[in-house]
Length: 148
Image (cartoon, rainbow, N blue to C red; front, top):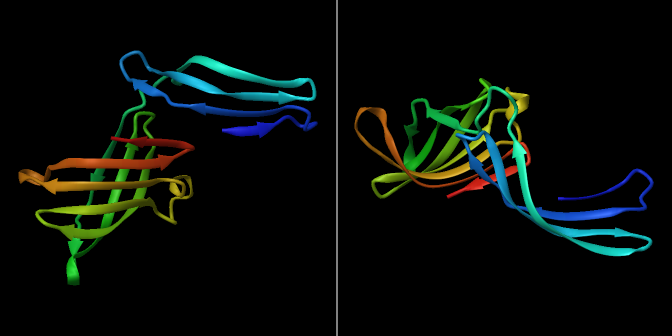
């Protein structure tokens, strides 16, 4: 993240990599970067711990609706992203069949303004009873990037 103060006399550039500890309801990790003023430039290094808001633990669930496989293996459908805060966001799913599974892109639906910044890319392998194994997942939303 980067920014300046209102007077534009101080500039800051920081890199933060945080890991979720759902049980402790905290995000923790290293922070590094620089703060620049007319007097010079100072490095910033250390550990950062952020408490999550009450009633949240940072977890989320993505539930896919019916996915329709069309011509040439193209996939379309919907999904609902449910956050631990109780917020639910409608998403649009597009993708392609690949082998036994799917490579999917999930984006916030235009009809859900709060979801417009959400983008998730995942590979999934369908299982029985409507479940699926998540192979890879990368996403962005609300200024955060997640992946595994």
